[in-house]
Image 1 (cartoon, rainbow, N blue to C red):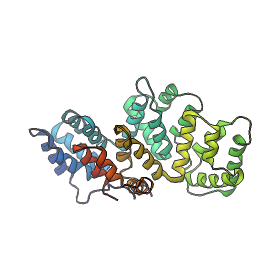
Image 2 (image 1 turned 180 degrees about the vertical axis):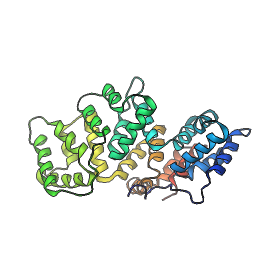
Image 3 (image 1 turned 90 degrees about the horizontal axis):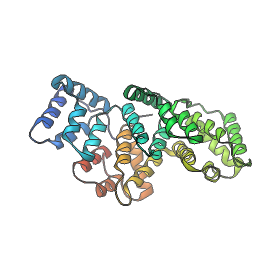
Image 4 (image 1 turned 120 degrees about the vertical axis):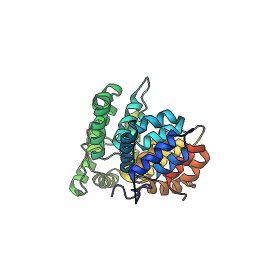
Length: 319
């Protein structure tokens, strides 16, 4: 079930007007009281933070997000603003940011579009239009090309089947279609891969990938790596990873954002905030399993100050 494996859930005994007042004092005082802001915002769910923001506006006539922006700076500002942004709007903004300017951040586009459910994508597209007055599909279209574009647009449409029922006959058929379109063929029929990987339900794809291995004696990943290239290959592999194990997919992304010189805060913030009420507990378990240290300790050794405190609160504990 979505939302049962998060590190953050609804706070019991929540009082939005009291919290809004405390937040207002923390921002209004001489020098911002970051500790209080962090305490309040990291222990409430996003829905509760929206209510705090509403009360804040009613009491002060100002937008909480704007006040956080003008009072904080750097990474702390970015993560605090992320926390008070509705999830669909946050995704929309991340997508826009990935397409802005000269280069496209394909990694971020892939991560978001490969991992969200149809329902989430419909909400994101709606939020995108509300905020930017342009359609997500149009913007993706003008920013990408070829098979990569086709697959992104299919995902952005939010047409993936969401049913949990699995059709064994269809899995065999799809596996054979994928085999014929790739391994068996001179040249690859990319459209078939896009169609099946972007539209079938997650449980259905799990079974299809098992069938695929029976037919081709290879994993679907091995075939994609052998047949595809570039961003299209990256996107299909991300979909396969999410089908097989979404938390492991995010654990790997987090590991990449934390290892080596310099931290990729853009990715770190996005995953920590967007998965905090969905599956961050599972992501933590996968992180520990694959990288031999806890996500908590990795964040601790890579960040500092109030920013570190905020991330550790969202992380929720050491494994």
